[in-house]
Length: 447
Image 1: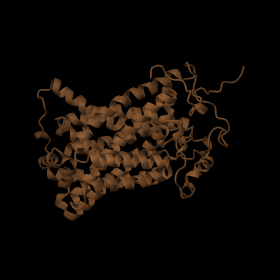
Image 2: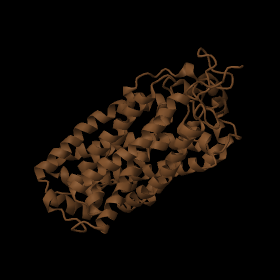
Image 3: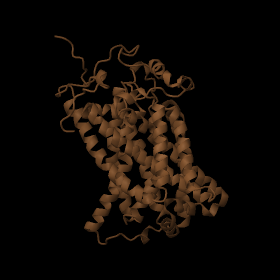
Image 4: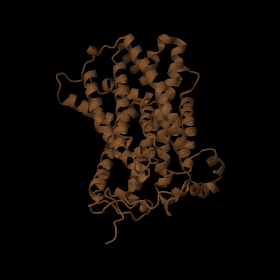
């Protein structure tokens, strides 16, 4: 009786760990193939050549799993998530105690899908949207990729608008349009280089300075005087309307965290296949949940200060942050400028994954370098940010409310595919890792 090609975990048995399998391109082969686009010199300077191609085991050298924790810290501890916390009282009329419960509860729910999809990266050596093909089929995954492109670009629009508003408030001579474009340009330059630079350098350390600065914001708010007892809920005693507000804001919190699930495997597919899934799950879960709670509650607390709440009504989140640092004069302006730049860590992750998702749309796109799609993503979200720069709060609330819907059904289908259909004794009996780029991948009927 011949030996099964799948191991007890349902994964295809590796061929030879010393070199890449014949049908998996190594880094050198990808560089040669893409050299005709004139990017050969750029690859020599460190620009990542690999796009959605599966990473062979012999090239998976990254074993610093703690770096993944710091990566998520950097992505989440940014200015835009402060503005999400402000929505609780200003838009949904929740008191601070209600907000604490919603942020922690829905944050836990939202971080679970990210941790699950992150586990799949090291096991397969593939990007998230490529893994999606095993559940939705090759062409079904194209529709999911399109949704993910819209999501990542939507997050980027939010990022560049808020940062642009803050920079404009600091210097009225700088048009808001210039601030939006500036943040986009810095982000795309880092993303163009790719995985090695932004994950292992920029994202590993940017969280540290931003954490210190946001702790200072906590302190300044406390000095101004948090007045939690003055908050009035929309409905007292609690009834159907309060429940609706809690669920609505809960959906926003869920989307703020779960919205990263469709890109989670993009950033750890270079970890060795024998990396313990439980370790990836826990590190990713905590790496998103802890900063989400830290930064959203800061936003919720700030608008309990009457002067800050008034500033929100006059100028959205950017107005609140300007008011916070007003007593510090020029020094406060400098710190606020640094906080505006915090969004770059968030935006480069969005831009990077948007480029990868574009590569998965149709077969010819795989032959176009990832870096080119990164530039295309930058152009799209910068134009959208310029067009929608005056409607930040409305766009933020409505966009986050929509994201949670498609992510929820996508992750449910991915879960049942992984644990039911593709387990060792399931209908499909495992994953054929060599078929990841084959248009006739089977389609899950539930999708």
